[in-house]
Amino acid sequence: MVDNLDELGEVQTVSGNSTAISQIHSGADHQTGNRQLLRTEKIYRPSEDQFEDVPFIAGNSVRGHLRRLLAEDLLDRLDYTVRDERLFHLLRAGGVLEKASGNSNIDVELRREVRDAFPVIDLLGGSTGSQMFGGSVNVHHMILVCEENNWRTDEQSDISWRQFVDKMFQTRRHDEPDDTGIDTDFGFNFDGDGSQEDPGSQKMIYHFDTIVPGARFEHSVRTESFTSELAYSCLLHGLRLWQDDGIIGGMSAAGLGRIDIDYDADLSQSDRYVDYVEESGDEIIEALDTLSKK
Image (cartoon, rainbow, N blue to C red; front, side):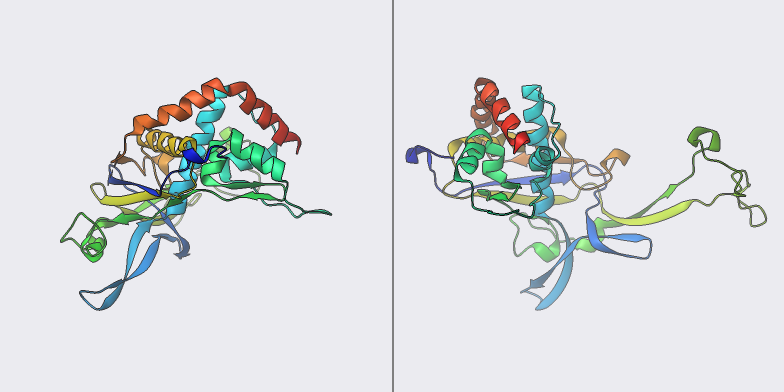
């Protein structure tokens, strides 16, 4: 929350470029059989007077990743363990809006305390109980640099998005019975040789589309004019954490989603937020405890 109107700034946009280092999977909301598709958006190509469904990485995916990184970083700096489920959801996922019981008036004092104590929530928004907090940053989609997107990207390409998409598959296999504690007296054959006559347990094969290493993305975030300098510094700290983390999309535990990120902002300005956490640690912990009891 901004007490001094001098801290209010103007709309600021931070732009960056990312390069895929490994395969990236950004799953769609639906799938075809056992194949998981990429998320796409329908665009209109003015030069060709036609429509295309082009892969992209949703801004909400980036927003969620920034929120989790900032939450983990904050709790680590404070050496604080979250034991309240609602607080966990507020910090890690933006919260869960609960059905109000009785009077559901806005708790102005709580809203002020939360925004004052947590630039992360002031920046990205959230909800706790029946209280909602709007964020002050717009996180845009990550746009694939390809021929179809030339009309809206600074970097130009003569390669179609289709060339940046690959198909992969993985298999899931059972653990050995002795390792799982499974009772094997139900007639399932764990020891088959895989032949038609003695198939044994079946592998589960699943297919998914990916964006290939070397693909480039353009991305930006835009702060509103009412964003405080502290919240803006928190944003830059989140972007710096993301640069160090270098992950987006799903299946990162299996080696997917590694990216190299470069932003055109001075990320050292994030030091103001880091200093705030160090100097106000006791007050932030007190606010966390208060939220746990709400």
